[in-house]
Length: 378
Image (cartoon, rainbow, N blue to C red; front, side):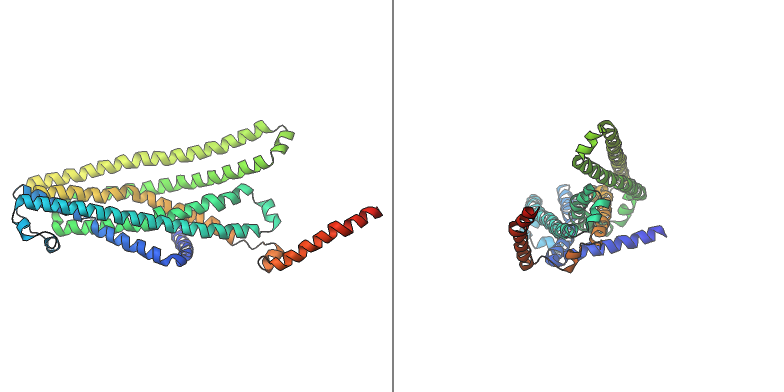
């Protein structure tokens, strides 16, 4: 039940974050389109390498129609010319794929920074209108963390979170579909250790998620402690409390260190486990190819396909945690924006330059005329 409620809350938070994307709908749509294009690009190079290896080893391969559009019939009939033509095509294709990936990364990062800029302005405007008693109840360092660190974490939802996760999932689905299309038996054999990877990824995600939550809380505590004590250092020194406060800071700092070490430990275990599972998949793959005397090109291409599946899976759990941390940060930021304890003048409207001029004139009148009269009377 709690997990269901948490998922609903996460979806609401994500939906609210994406309301800030509305002014940048074009960029967001472009990032999704580019994610789909990159997923289609994913299986092309391994397939071209398979054709090249088969041609070089004398194995006949059926050339797809889309490739015949780029290679002449003369090249198709000559092994050496075919290999050279396919190699040139791959070089051009790599440049196109790299350029597409660069544009995708730039747009997603730009989108995140644009959203962060708008949110930071809104949060600062909100804080500047809060009632003074809110600053008595809330440590300044906490508000600083909400305005800077937490909003920066929301940027990761776009640059390292949702859209990159979708791009990786699209690529995995297209690659798996290509593998099943080429040889479904070989695909099933090579994916025998796959359930172990899913279980390992789940536990890694949960472990890092808890560690990152501890890190975020520790950072908030550090910011609040340092801000308060620098602002009130005169009081600390007046009561000769430097050693006692240093011990408190040492405890907060240790919690921050331990939280980071916990996350590092999870990474240190997870990545070797992924490498072992990948090695097992390749072992099953090589055994099946050798036992059934399949083409060498098929073996090479499937090794590349497995790498294309496992490579994003190595980081996808981490990206899910980045997304989760972004949502936790968003929840904190939205609590600041939902605070309705405002200054009376702030709730009446925005800054009015005419009212400000009148107020300044009255202040000058008091300073120049009324104050001297009162001083003379005294």
